[in-house]
Image 1: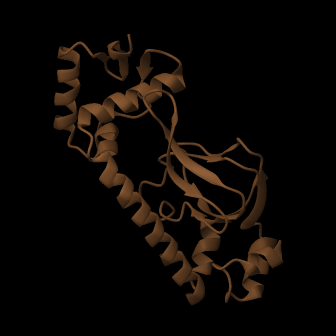
Image 2: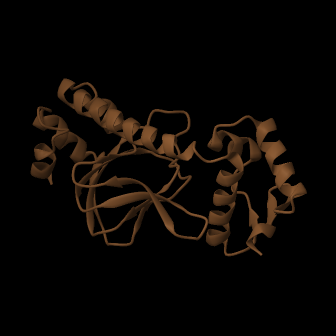
Length: 214
């Protein structure tokens, strides 16, 4: 395990003693996942950073027809969770799912803080944040081509698949839902009212009947 860690691009140049101490303190763990396993569930808190040693994973959301929409792909040496670790909103926005057998290093937040004292790690960490940001920007550009109504229909339909019902319960507040789509609450409420007036949905607090699925 130690040798695998030392050979990672992110840890090359980091003092071996630091790596060994973090492993001894169980601040760095290596875990294996079989194909088809969920590594991180949507809306769970991010407590550390992952580095993929082998295998492939995806971050996905559900499309309106129940199929998976792949937002990110992670392969050997990819970093997962670095962009969430030090933010106020530190919950995974999507499911992280293994599409092959995987081996992953889980690095605690305390360990990341220790490693950030090492210049070589800092540069790799910043590079990974930059790559994740570029990927997100591409997705944002794609999603913003849709109207708020289209995004709401996709989101509600995906929840319907997960909850196996045409009447869904929102897992988050309407304020959080507005934040999720990057709109103000009045804009969200107006669109929900229009959708109700058009007969697409019925709203009772967090319970929403999806008439558009009939």
